Image (cartoon, one colour):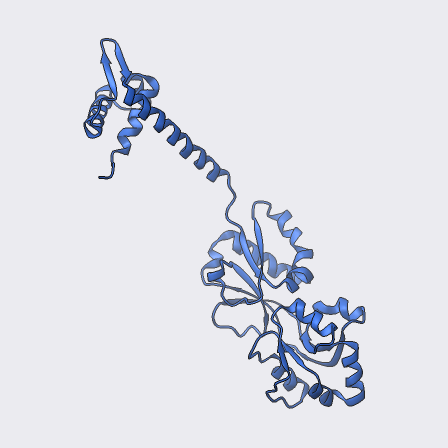
Length: 291
């Protein structure tokens, strides 16, 4: 049978600490008779005496001493944990991003948020598949694309048109054979199976597009950038690869771009009810507006 008289244990612990019904009654804001009645009822439930009644006071029995020591340790542990919980910061805001976006855009700006909101903890969760947010414990995710997702709430961050990029050898082939012919000879790198990005780009470039076997899926954008540099194929990238273009390791193969592509803030309905999450979302949007 489960023990259910925990209020009486608290009264007993107070009496044991004072070794006095009267002093315990004063602390508990009860009458001395009420405290004595609670102790007698507790002794009946436990089946053993807690105190020996003396002509001038009380003294704990051996079992009473053991129970008092056990309760003191338990109550001390509970009080210490409560103090820890009061002082502990709120759980961190978990932000799901690709390492590509985190290193090239978010990380250089993040300190401004942390300085303005020292109480808010941020946890950056590197992710490739940013579709399952709740299952991964993600409060906010930053997705790349056209923003036409209906599985989550979406707020635009900034447009970042996607354009075809290749290694210098791919650029030389475009110049030699022409864009259309070169595309037919180069492997297309995609971010996921079934992605419509290359079809969208061909449409924007006024070129026909047909499903082809020479498509290599490389989900991680940083790995995809390196694969292009290594000559494994060509990929749609955006302005965040400008350092590689400036260094001559990547080339923009055409002026055509997916102008409606960019970065979007994605989150589950109700997530912004958390003020810390809302603060970080607002900061992201403001930072994107500043550029």
